[in-house]
Image (cartoon, rainbow, N blue to C red; front, top):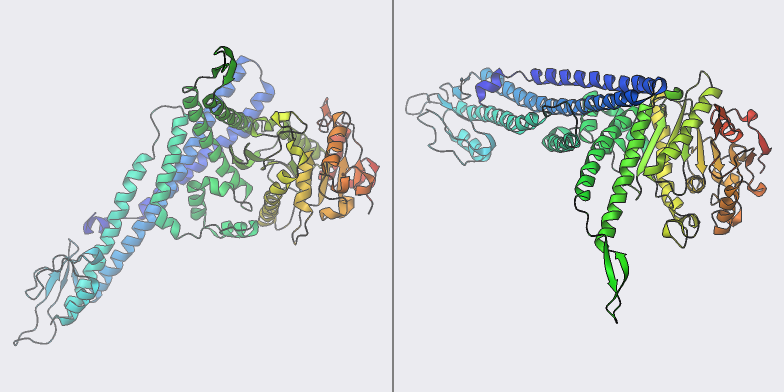
Length: 628
């Protein structure tokens, strides 16, 4: 780029283009939401058969197309905004230099050189002649033009020598002309660098020529994001970054302090980071994590395809060392490692399919929009998913459900179904009020509850270490949910923590320590093996807001096992009278039956939980009231 090109450039055109792509992004985002929240749910509710399944499959592909366009338009918007910022800065620098030169009675020529007039004290009876200088950026001062008094070569002189030469020159205009010419050259150089940096990046931001968004396309999105992020470093450096080790309140304040353009930039270039920031609005985290989900699905699918093509030999023959005769077969080390990785990938894909199906179920059985508040297919050994029914930032009532032993990403549908049922029943009990129920699975849950489970002789659920490690993460999330709710409404939501089985142990470890912050309004321990405290009052709440329920069958063995293992502090568990919690009536026949529905009628145990969620305490059916 030369002086003439920069002079003629209108940076606002890049800003206008960015606005156009932003509008396109918003348009396809709205279309995607309509497909997910209205059409897909209605199709599943009203249509059955192969034709309906095929139509839903096509709808899913169209939804993916819109999502892909939304993400790519976000990248283009950010790239154009960064380019505008850099070009605008260069253009302003150029205009300021030209204006200063003209005000100093100099002429800026068509090639960017600066002509200066005669001036100064006479030398040999003559006023020193004027001349022309050509600037250069970064200390390379180049040709000094046609002045007979110009130095012959300034190709490697630094600014200090330029100033010295100007001071020694008999024409006082010379030094100032060099300064203006250098400023012009620096502006042109900056614009050239921006052009050379962004032109190839923008050319890369285009889709292939088919109508299918493949795994390869989403992998390319990740590459595009990395390229734009690297190119936009100087632009991002001018934006206040998220607080280092920031607490949720600091994260909320940081996000509110960004301009819409800056928010767009961080969301487009750092989706995983933004999606993981407790305190940031649910709408924003959902959008970020859906991008993470799509990119993760592509990456995992490609890896699995590659892995299946490289399956090693499964078994090898064992021979008797004395006779040399074969005595049996064992799995090879190579195949065992291969199979372990395959299980990880299968678990991740299964979980991602479950989440996608929940998106498409919006509207079925009155389910509200789902918000993906956290996602990582390989976090915590067995994956992470935090997903909400309804927007918790604006909900009058919020319930956070923590699942227990044997939960992995690949079977998270069982836990999400419990949250769905809690939402439906709570919503019925509180007409005119809004409710959000959140499935929180962001910890390494034990995989074994009794000897022999998952090959463990010593069951993992006997130990508190899994819960104590999970507690700070859950606490951070709860603080973030409150910070986001305060940002959106100026108030807090009525919040209920529900822990099933070992999930109640996680809640106990989360709430048992004194804190300056409110944790929750109510706590419900369902089929709890113990909460690491021996009194309800030790959970940081008035015991009348601590609730427990028991089930029949194998639930007794779970609770007694926790008592013997020490999860119940001093062998006291929440359903014990000595614990001091409200003991709710329950008709659950088993450890997993607390959320049963029959013919759209909730079980007593499900209805009791929903009544606590919406604050209808007087209607809760009790076997024993809390005491302390």
